[in-house]
Length: 396
Image (cartoon, rainbow, N blue to C red):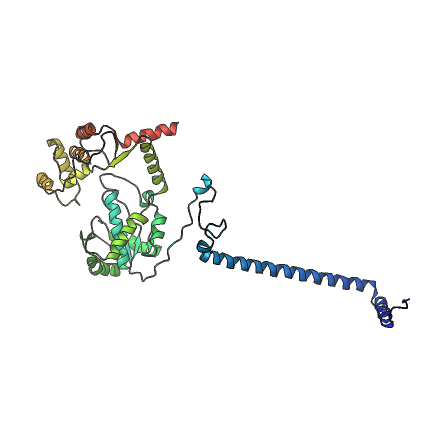
C-alpha cells in the first residue's frame, strides 16, 4: 500500500510491474535477468579487446618512432629505443655461440643458357682460384653452374670432395644473387649426360671474357651441358670488366668458406702457437711437385734432378717437358730455396727466436735442405709437431 507522499503515478507503476511478474511467472523473470547480465559481460569483453588493440597499436607506433628518432632524441636513455650495447648484460657463452640468422640475398632471375660442369685440377690454391674464375664465367654467360669437382689425380692424391673442404650450402646461397648453382644436375639433364650427350673440353689458358662469350657460350647453347675438365689459369687476370674482378674477389673471400670442422682445426692450431708466443707462418712452395712442374733444380743433386724429370713426364697435362733450370731461375720463375728464404727473413729483421710454422707439404730434400733455415731460425714448427701437441691435449 503506497504512502501518502508517493504520487499516484508511482503507485500505478508498481502495480503494473507486479501484474507483469504474475503474468510472466518467476521463470521468465529469471531468464530476463540472465540475459541482461550476459549482455553486460559481452560489453565488458568488447571494451577490453578494443583497449588491448589500441594499446598495441600505440606501442607499435612508438617503436617505429624510436627507430627513427631514438638515437637522436633519446640518446643515453636506458630504454629499448637506444642501440647502445654498453649497458647490456654479458651473454652466456652457450648463447653467444648461436650463429646470427642468415639473411639471404634475393635470387637473380635470368634465362638459363645451359649447364656448366667444372673439374678442377692442381693443388688447393690452384683449384680455389679456378673456382673463382668459373663462377665469374658462369655469371657472365648466364648458365647454371654445378658445384665444382675437385682434383683427385694430382700429386697429393687427395680424395676430398667439395663439401669436405668448403661449406657447400653457404657457397650456393651467398652467390644466389649472381648465378644459379646446383649441387648436381637435374635428373632429366643427368640422363642426357649418362648417355654421353654433353661436351667435355679444355678451355684455352689465360683467355679473356670475350673468348667465353664467343667460343664457349655457343657450345653450351648447342650441347646444353659443357664440362670444362682443366680450369687452372683459364681466365686472364688483367683487362677484365670491373664487375668480373669484383665477383672473383667475392667468391674467394666470402663464398668459399671452409667447413666448420676445418675452421675449428685452424683455431686449435693458432691457439697452440700463440701459447708459445709470437709466430710467423711460412709457405715455402718447395715441394716435389712444384719443383718438378717448374723444372727448378737449383741445389739438387743428380739423382734428385732425374727424379723430378721423371715426375714431370709422368703427367701428360704438364706441357713443358724440357726445361732449362738456370734460365728459369734467372728469369725469377723459381721458388726461393730454404737457404734463400733464411736470408730474406734475416734481411727483414725477423727475430731469430720467433716461431716459424711451415705451412707447406713435405719439403723436397728433407732435413738436408731445411738445415740452413733451421740454423738461422731454430724455432721451426712443422705440421707433425702441432699434430703431436693436439694428440697430447686430447689425452689430457
